[in-house]
Image (cartoon, rainbow, N blue to C red; front, side, top):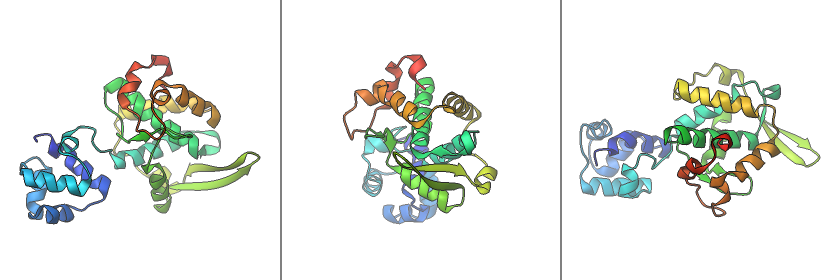
Length: 230
């Protein structure tokens, strides 16, 4: 279980548990739990089993590098894409979802690990993680983004843009290399409309060979032709 501590804080934050809540579940002190999260204390098997029940994960998933997404980083990815100069500095919601997907899978293609590790599901307008809509609501509630619903002939579109608060927000959880990839993806798709990026992602191997409603495997992108990764 030597890799558990590397993921434990990420698991806890993704599920929005405090250190004390985890400690209470494990029936240990908060100090002991902090030592576990720092890799200074190995959990016992009963503690691992309790963690799994609390977090909804198997022992294998608890030790896996990609078992749970980095939700905090995912929020920074939103802000990074929105900071680029899209038309009127507004991005349609569906297009933003696709850009985030491309960043995660392109990073996996280059580094063999995803940028945020979100689980992207194959749905009609996907691929999109279940947390996408929660992230939108959270960023809006924090005053970092603005969501404007605009009516068109073919329906209503939600346009996402940064607020002044969002523009001032420091992006802390993305490396320089990760931000550069986001910039490259933004530049490629800046002038493209939503339908174009939807068609592109739906023609990619990971989406095409996955079943409806299924979580799309990151590993599938490694079989894609380089020019079709993003």
